[in-house]
Image 1 (cartoon, rainbow, N blue to C red):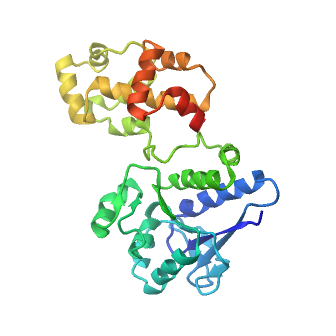
Image 2 (image 1 turned 90 degrees about the vertical axis):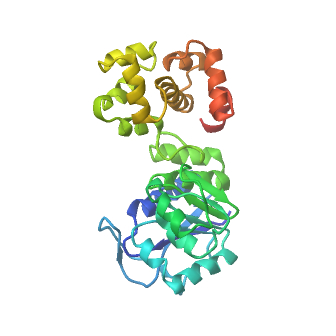
Image 3 (image 1 turned 180 degrees about the vertical axis):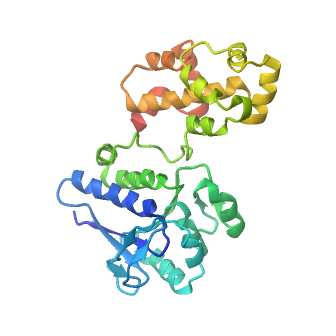
Length: 318
């Protein structure tokens, strides 16, 4: 099998992790692909000169947009420089031309500012860093933006959410090219917690919980995460923050946009998904560890949320 050439666009003020994260993922796949490297990884600049990322890291491109090898995949990383370069007619024309002779085009994080400016994503599904979603929608109303997704594929175009989501997308592309075994080996090599599906949110429910707490409920998410396996009633939650049940419901809805029971259920399901994909514990034991009163209840709730049984989810993503 001949190596597929993946070209990474480099430019001034790119986001370093958007480049080196996928670069290292594809590099790891080369170690597990079998007969020789599966990927040839190259960088392509606007000119043959050093560029610096937002964090000061320097990159000297291997090629320029005027002279480069035939590409299998083009990766466009994000960075604040992308919001300036998306007015460069020469670069945009070059990206459009690649749509005709490249198997797939990928934008990571805010690299979508460059790819969307070409018009290639018009009427297509895409995603980007959640923080920039409102601005992307305003600038490119033709997009069908799903700001919650880790990554999205629409035809030969692939887009990813913020920063580390670019590595999730890279693993998905490795899976498509070389199979799940190589993708999972690459994830283990990178010490990634799990190989996440694209429809998973860009940040986990526990992380969202910890960043949403405020005022008198600032420490409540941590308390809930520490007590998932226990019988956590509204009365017990109220007692933990020295509130009446009525006041807790009111303040909780204002802070988290839902009820304590629904919020707790989401935290339990998120923890269960992590256990399903990172351990071999039986489903019944996982149900008990995250606080469901029975395996049957856990299975019903899990299927309602994710459209699959715990066992099916584990078989697909573990």
